[in-house]
Length: 192
Ligand code: IMP
Ligand code: MG
Image (cartoon, rainbow, N blue to C red):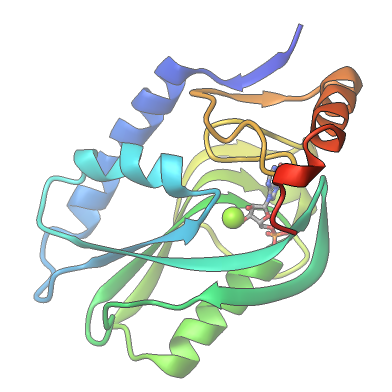
């Protein structure tokens, strides 16, 4: 049996709760807040969350990369920048997982260096506090994990697989082996 970490129903309840909190937090903004999803992992979460934010917002995306397989490489790169200016606006970063905090620390520093947002808020579906190496505070978190678990589903992938699942689970060794075998047989289709 797979270890279910967040069911489809739980995801909806959590997104509603976070949406309510953000609606209150952003009630008195002068400029329209900008919600920035971190691709690709946060896309599922992003589009489940924003319908629960009961005010006008703008949406944009950035892409960072540091994970390969089940482990972070530790080197973070920005592979897609913003297309809407966040200057003067509250910028809400929507992320799937804050793990070591390296990606988020890099992203916040990058955004502060290149733009002038009014402030930056961080909203993450999972806050893996046990793994933190950098001092990153998640302002709005869906679930705090104190144990190190590798999660997949609902945007979170193993080698680009399982992002489409409507729930989040911890894969077993045999799930990983199955996916590795599937990918071995699929090499011709890969771009890289
Ligand atoms: P950090 O830089 O170590 O905080 O890693 C953050 C990034 O790694 C997140 O944006 C995720 O996309 C990815 N990540 C972290 N933990 C997991 C996981 O358990 N499953 C899949 N991706 C993860
Ligand atoms: Mg991510």
